[in-house]
Image: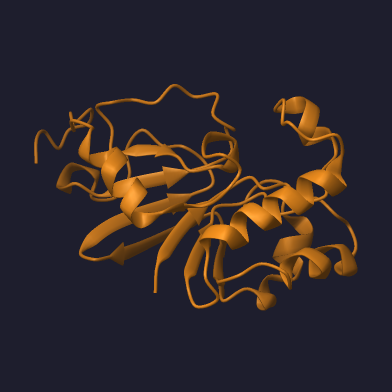
Length: 181
């Protein structure tokens, strides 16, 4: 099993194309590209952490038309545009309300739709992955966090090894009362 992270797909959200300058003519083209990009990298038995803003439709069939076509088991962390996905959260492998902590290969990871400056165990090397900002927050080379949203990663999920490579280039510098590791 491989582990993947993504956020802010905004399936069926036509206005996100202009808000984020996405290279698609309409939401149909965007949906198809996002599904294709997802399925090129994610296998059926992989685990995908989706950090919110999954889709923007209002009807169950809109959600189902996309959800049933995506590979992998999806752990959903609620974002601010997830009324429909949250109502249908039972379809996901697991669902969490905006925040979740996990451990993969001994690495503690805090997952949240929103960026944080500090998080649980950050002073012990825990990572923080977030979405919401669509790549507009500058990456901090001294923080073990970054935006895993599709707008930052070629409109596809990013895998654990890619995350580890990004984190390996960072230098942790504490900003709260915990001091150094």
